[in-house]
Length: 443
Image (cartoon, rainbow, N blue to C red):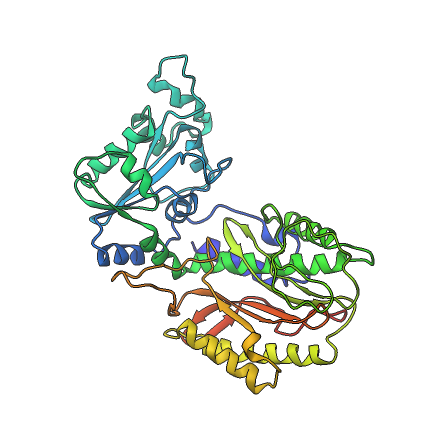
């Protein structure tokens, strides 16, 4: 873990303005970086004996396993099972073809149990030696490989049922992040519960490794936005801009998803409507336009978010300058207020009051919102342990929370700022390096 944190610090020493792909090079992660104590606390508070995670992001969170070539709506070829009463003995069930992954990326889970999966033929009888097809010669002698070979099963469901029995959970109250999977197991005496909220409760407060991953992701986004601006030329379209951003991200080692990494749409003329991009926009990005960079992507599955307003070949003028200055002031004061214990509604009211004091003509029209950030753009439980709605959630020390500020207007007036903020007892720490002002021809 210390080596990984030093690697993260080295990345952050490279400014986003001059960063290269080498600054964001990926390396094996620590064996464990999840907030295990917080997850165990959540399980106890909800009366859970165990938890079974099959969602790719939760499996990665709990085990450091990031499987390639799998889509989220496909049958999930892995499951991690954790007992609150035996927290040092989690079990990871996974498709046989993924076993060798752990020769590159280690995990703290020592009990790996592969099962015969889709690559194995149906026209030949299953054999315990089938697993040997997926074990490289240079890793065959590892002790955990020997255990995995001995635990090889011929289907996933039987492997999961056996693990539940070994962990003495077959008659317990067990939460599943996919309850349907829990019911399909048909384990008599097993009480199936919803595992979404306890996992999100754990994920809400970041470990040091997670914070380093989010700092790196934010720095990559900042560098990609700067490269995108540098790639603009007269006649370039919104599609060109989106493509330039995706190319910059890829060159730096990150990933965006279809239909693109730039989130906001940009109505033309004086239209102040709030729209999202579709990937189909093909209008020309004219000088003087206010481009709202709100960009999403990942590296090592950890998300980046945000950006701010770029004034193409210019600077905010007239009323737009007042909106830009007011938004910067709101951000500055909100970061001071983003301390443990603050509630979202309180922060929204405070931000709107600052807009009012700054003299903008319609503070009620300002869009001010927050969400968690980590492996998703939420990482917040929907219901608390006492089954209450968590819509107006509370900040905690160690959260990472983007603050979104948008003062709407036409294409030459609108102003947008999204800062990614690490929450601490002294207030919020911005993860972007570029401040709260607009991006201009000078910056």
